[in-house]
Image (cartoon, rainbow, N blue to C red; front, side, top):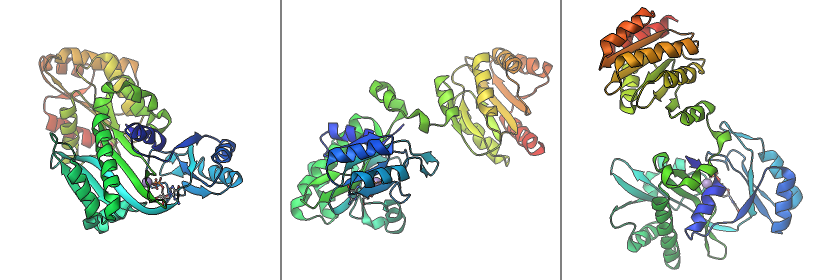
Length: 378
Ligand code: GDP
Ligand code: MN
């Protein structure tokens, strides 16, 4: 789950990181009123769940309330890579002397959290990562010891910071690491972390992704979810307890179990097809769940065939087959369906399915090949 800048900034501040406080406006007039209250130049920033807002015209400086109104009306409604701006953050403009990149994320290959920093902070960090990776300092963090003070200072020195700025930087790096850990984030990022003209450190941007699997530990985060920004089908799926991720292909996949769902997508690709989605119906495959899965998958107009892949462990194949036939009575499915059913009572299940005219196989490979052929023929 991604947080908006203003939400992440509030969380950073609650962990002691100095941020540039601002307020959110949804109309140009509201923005102008906030600028009036700020009593000086402000920055107006699009609140969308994507980076690179600056380059896309989503961050503007304004000297007066009138300029703020203009800036806000230019930014509100702007489409930044598919994210329409509905809110802007208005904050006092800061006099920037130096911009640093600072982030914490998980290095899966090394199985450790990693702190990354660069003296080339600001809007072009992706470019730095691509063209001058040596300009990014990385420090792996021992999971038992955390980010040591000396380690944080070492990052500061490696960035070439003035000696008397290193301690301040190290404090923020440790606070950010602490925030990342305690809030169960998979990413916590400040870009830019700035040194102001007065020599103070200030987090001018805030980005945070929370690990969805840890959300149950943070019930407060649910209210931060931006339902406007979510794919409506994925939202619908989550509310039904189905894991669903929309992809670009034309073969709809309905599978029980996350691992099998991944393997199913691989099988489709091995036969020259492209999966339209990842879908895990969860434990069983009741008529309700399968009917829901059918409507999720067929909501995508690109889908030309559906591959159902169910392995009956505790779930019995005949019950699954009844679920599928019952679901088909409730939902109209306009594309060919291929079923692979194996495991407990699979034979009875396949028999039931073939009676209703469906193609059922016990081989995943064969079913995937059939689904790809069906999609290509359609
Ligand atoms: P992003 O492009 O989505 O990462 O948006 P940021 O919040 O990082 O803003 C982009 C850039 O706008 C920053 O790197 C700064 O250079 C600039 N910026 C943001 N806030 C201020 C401010 O208060 N004063 C000044 N002078 N520049 C700002
Ligand atoms: Mn930024």
